[in-house]
Length: 251
Image (cartoon, rainbow, N blue to C red; front, side, top):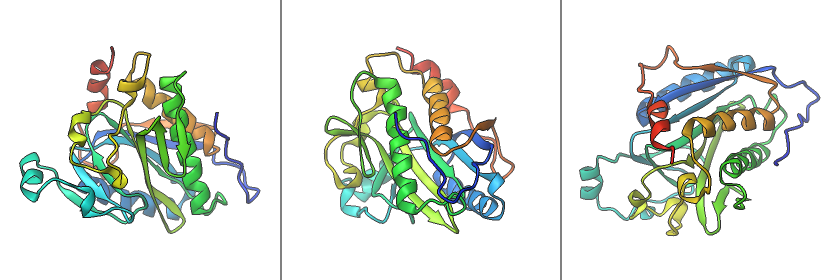
């Protein structure tokens, strides 16, 4: 078990965390939506939220990434309809696929008394615990911004802090098509990534992983309660791929 966050500024944790289950969001639309959430939380810490979603296939490259991580030609990217987006976050190259859990916390970390490094470490430990709860007794390794099983990473961390508010976050592989990683060196590492579905000796239910993720994240960041919300007025209605995907993830 990872540690539960202890606030360093003497304040009590916020009692309720908003959790948005938003299905599949096109990445460019998500970036606009993210700016709205950061603005809201920077003005009112009670708006703190976590977004759980996934994205249509595409690539985002953070500050530690490089075009060299993408070994596909422009023609191959066009044929796959994979956009490449350079984004202002930590971490490197992430391949976004259906069958992932994108975990994006929007937390007032300055008010919570957290440094950027402490926030990223807490997020990494929490994501490792989410993975561990699914694949146990198989060991899961958490090191810096890496969550891995053996030599193969199962999640990537790429966070940003703006106006004292966290954004972006983590991408956890539940059951994406791992063959699609051929030609993509995520974070510059050619070692293939893995997934909960591939590694777990147990049945994998996307809805169970999602629910466990929320409980674990709320605990680690010191929130006593959370409320589930399935839409946001700033977004167009989104397909509920996670609900449909839950049936396909049962083995």
